[in-house]
Image (cartoon, rainbow, N blue to C red):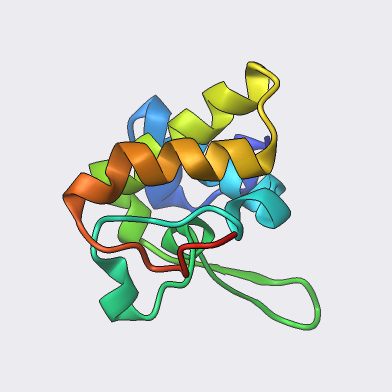
Length: 115
């Protein structure tokens, strides 16, 4: 988890589950870029659940956060599930499968079907 102090003020004031989602996404881009989102954010150009939290990391490492995760419970729920499944020892492939099965009912994935 990234330190809370590194998060934008809006994130620091958000509910704990939202703070944790941002902290986790920032600290685990390789995992979160492998996990889809099902809230419909693909229409906003998001290509993974990671994009719900991080808009851009420039060449100097400066981060521009996306505010989408502040107001979307599906994004945050997906991230919380990823965190739980990792604690349970699941692989990224297994996590992707669980997320697909759990959240496909809410809308289209913003990623291809096959990981």
